[in-house]
Image (cartoon, rainbow, N blue to C red; front, side):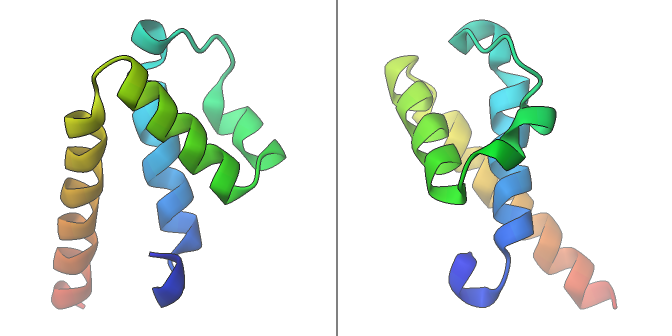
Length: 78
């Protein structure tokens, strides 16, 4: 997503996933407030490692697919 200038969308997808599963993966901080203190790569690694550790890789993948489909649908409407 970064290669097609969608860094903000990528960051939002990762934050949404981390927020959605914060209770299960043990994140106490408000990820929307703290995410700007991390690089996009750090955020991706955090989400991926937590998803892997807690067997949520399919949920992370689904978050990306659903978000990309929504973005594509929005662009088609314009």
